[in-house]
Amino acid sequence: MVCRNLLYQKKQDLEVYYPLSSRILVYTPLYTGAELIIAHRDNALAEQIIKADPHYPALQIHDTGIENYVVIVGESARRSNMQLYGFAQQTTPVEASFARNALVFSQAIAPASATVLAVPMILSNADPDHFTVDRLADNVVNIAAKSGYYTEWISAQGNSGKSNNYIVAIASTSAKHQWIQTRYDTDLLPALDEALKKPGRKVIFLHINGSHEVACDRYPESAAVLNTGDKYEDCYNNAIHFTDFFIGEVARRLQDSASSLLYFSDHGLEKNPELASLYMHGSRNPSKEAYDVPQFIWYSPQALENQKRRLGWVSEPWSTANNYSLMLSWLGIDTGTENCLSLLEHCYQPQSQIFVMDGGRHIFNYSQLRKNFSSPETAIPWRKAKSDSL
Image (cartoon, rainbow, N blue to C red):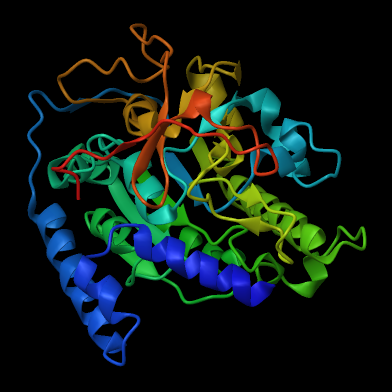
């Protein structure tokens, strides 16, 4: 059953965006040639994104009263498995305690069901209909650096391969970027400690492994605090709990300074009872649970004292593809153009429709998707990404 799962996921991965030549070679004795084709394409695209120089009419920064900004880019966290959102098990006690000092999104929706597509759209001006070099180059890491922030990217995920190409290109626009080979996300904390020593305003990005498959490997044995007897359910929920512990450790380091923390997951996971491991990335006929993710902005006591902040729950659906706009407001950055996709701006209006993408680059209206993987399958209208998309 596990092998079946891996073969299914391999097929899904190949559909993400790879050239036809690489998809043919992978099933032949010349399969190594597929990796060379992919690597060549990835390197060329990354170079284009890094070299692009977006123009902003009147870039300026406003005083937010915050010195340390930390963005935790989560991985494969299902909102429905989190205590913060009403889950019965105590998977997120730290985050649940944050609610009074945070802006919590009750219906955050990821723009894609795969990391390689979701994270770039969340951090940049790209969206399912406009996944292009110029949009990806217009990203919050790059803008923050241009605005005078010290920027640093610290990642527990790799810096090469099919799941990281666009992400690495965006990360590489930071002043410092490092990819730490580690089993557990907590091993990023020493690098965070060093980054926080930098003087002045700073934005630090932490890209974690979270609860990505195989969830049983995402936390040490000592962190296996949930034990119902259902192995893979417990593994996944313990991985969520370990991410919660990690978030608490980050917040503890920010507690005594004027700081703010943004956490979101790149995408959700579908629960497939036919798989031994239960959880998987969004399928070709995805359900809403493939996109339902947690998100919140937390503020330290000092940050709350020096300026008024928006706190409480955001009840309406929120596409995390708009996090680019949200983060500009959060950081106090004005590009010289209207920023009405940010709910922190007075001109913001909730979106009437939210579009999402699966691994094969099919675009769906989120509201038309079935509720979860076990819901009856129906013919859901979709369209392909525009021809100029990567």
